[in-house]
Length: 620
Image 1 (cartoon, one colour):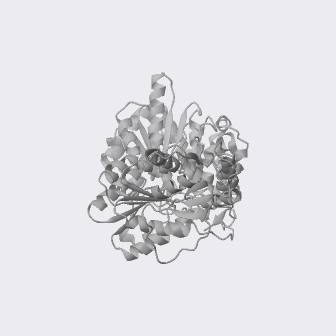
Image 2 (cartoon, rainbow, N blue to C red; image 1 turned 90 degrees about the horizontal axis):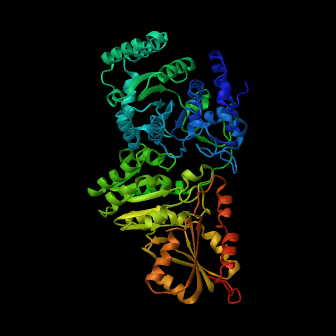
Image 3 (cartoon, rainbow, N blue to C red; image 1 turned 90 degrees about the vertical axis):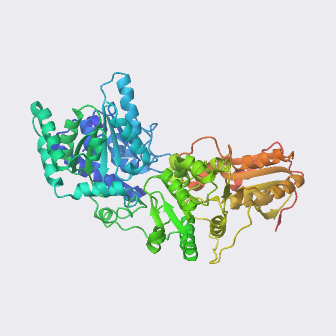
């Protein structure tokens, strides 16, 4: 069946919708099996996506997806089917929602839990402009655990906004869901009277339009007797469900009838992550984000997996936990991504997944630190942005002993701009009582995690996605002297001060330039004594970092020099003042001028560089 847009879909008869779903699901499996990407979440939303675009007049009616993992079927049905094979590839479709990519992508979604707030804003905007427009927000039972989602529900339920919130309940985010709200949904779904409620709702919603209002009042009366004061009704929403999110007929009928009701509405659907592909149904976590696989058997290729910085953190955390029973591991719903699977199995009583609640994670850690525990918060750089106030107000102001293990620092490749850790050095560097470590390789990362843990106060170790140079880590851990940089190679004229894992590129460029190279190790505190010495013996100091230049490590060096009254030319190299699109990590660094060639070219083009003075490079 050839469908190029939702308007084509709406020309289909309802009897044809199941075929659309089957073909969409098959196309999704076949395409992702060849290129990799996010799979199991999208498999669970095929019927919902089809029903939404069939019932609502998109793109005039707004559909706001929460996070893009579940939106691959949406891309297929909104004119991007023939481009799906480019998803997450350089120059191809984004793996997430992107307003500039399609008019059907009404709101960019990389981080979770934003859909209800955005949809409410759109509904109010429509009302202000006197437009007869439906606005639908889709949010998962994992994403709805975030405080922002509850803030939006609280606001929406107290307004007469024409917004429909759909809870896609599959008992999963990336990891299995946790928390009291998840338990509430489980009780709601497994209670002995739910099936009768569902059947009553289904019958009511199939009654002819002339008596629909009476049917709705009857349904509310029945639900009030069986499930009194449900959470969502108390929040001010008209609540419908739970219904089977894979029953396309029921979905279409239910959505049509809810479309006819104005004000805040809440539809609870139940789906299965990985639906229609047995390997993904059996292992939804494994098939959440995948590399190419056999679409018949689900088997992945035999490509050896390189050891990553996340693996380094995972092993260090377990080793440290064995040595110190006060260590606590905390993650905001990223057990797999942040490397806490082994820790959760070996130390379950000291492992805390707080759900998608980054703000809570930081303050929860602060509370533990107040009473003598040693919390380690494993968090992506891009997600730490969501907890900035708590970082300052609850941890730093009180000078509490919390260690941040910041994964995905710098560029992240296929996930693109929404997940790039471009800003952490800038927003951490200005926070008092915060020590910032930037390891250059795996062995140094392990030692820095240990050093940060030993430090009495707020400390952060930031490391990139993926593998390093393969530096061998020792079982023993060495505490690195606070604020002490490492002279790597002695040259003249130019000194390259490198912060983090770009050190190999900096060393290669320095070899060609005859320059000095320093592994700075710390962004805060800086090694002021060594910087002063370098300034006295070199005419140009070059800083290199995988962070935006504005306010980053290089800015810290500039500020030190100014405060010390030292007059020396500086060149700050880092990520540009723009968002970096998705692509291969190595290629993106090259595009940003942060490979050896780019560093060399930047130095040679500097007005402060004079190559007649450069002398022979001497390694130390």
